[in-house]
View 1 (tube, rainbow, N blue to C red):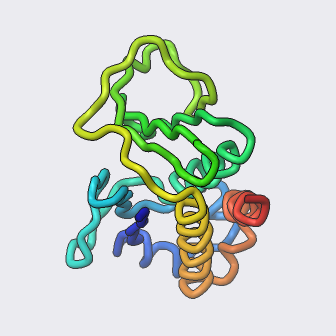
View 2: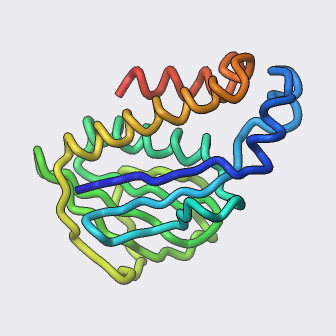
Length: 175
């Protein structure tokens, strides 16, 4: 089982309601909130429905998750970096099954957020080789991305025309 829990921060919801698409594109380009990835009970991130705060970049997270899902259709190995830390998620594709591991890598020399070649120097985190169905992974990413875009539309219809949301929509449609 793979599940994504996310929530737009209360502050960003209030800001988004008032912005024009031009203001969003020039001043924000992303939306802050909470996100948690749940791989069969092995969780990463933070999600609390009662907490109004969050500082994860949600558009960026959904872009990276969609890119990882897309690359798994072409590569047996994909690693996705958490934007602000040395944490990586390793995805090993074996047809219908994906093995997911949490890894720590010194990111001093890595300038990408997604790679398709295994690393030489890494350390596994608290969990390794968690098995999930590839179709469940792809469907959950697609479903939650569409839900996220729809929640933005409900807050402010014009933000849907922003460059970052257009790119996200194109990505989710291509997976």
